Image 1 (cartoon, helix red, strand yellow):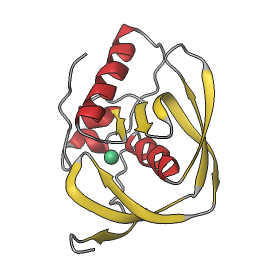
Image 2 (image 1 turned 60 degrees about the horizontal axis):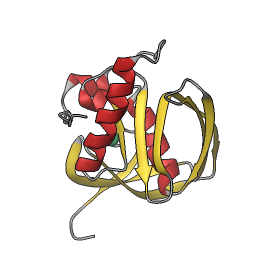
Image 3 (image 1 turned 120 degrees about the vertical axis):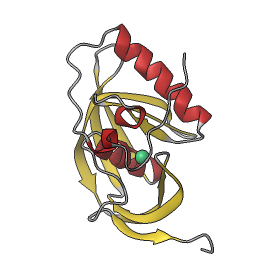
Image 4 (image 1 turned 180 degrees about the horizontal axis):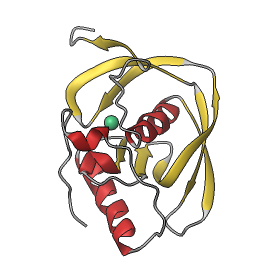
Length: 155
Ligand code: ZN
């Protein structure tokens, strides 16, 4: 496994629309492993492929509750409710903001074995699903429509 370089805001890779994964080959499996290692090393709860410069629809998420979740070609199939909570991004270090997200989402994605799986998340996990899947379309939490306001250190 290898630790990958995380691209920072301003890098064009973060604004690219990522391509669907057609074949889950060795490269995709290695990417998943490397992304998990990179996310853990950076103390993040999620990482999307464009954050490491790869324009593919691949995401890893890990919360204390969820354990490691690997998503290939993920799609949000249901959104319910609303939450206004704090969010940060490994590509936007030392900053955080309050975002508007659904309280609960359902997500459909392929796992590393090519099986279609469904996930349900609320709270932090719902935010992570939305945040990481947004990355695949070149969107950041600081974009209009998601960000309510940035949070200062004193808060
Ligand atoms: Zn992010």
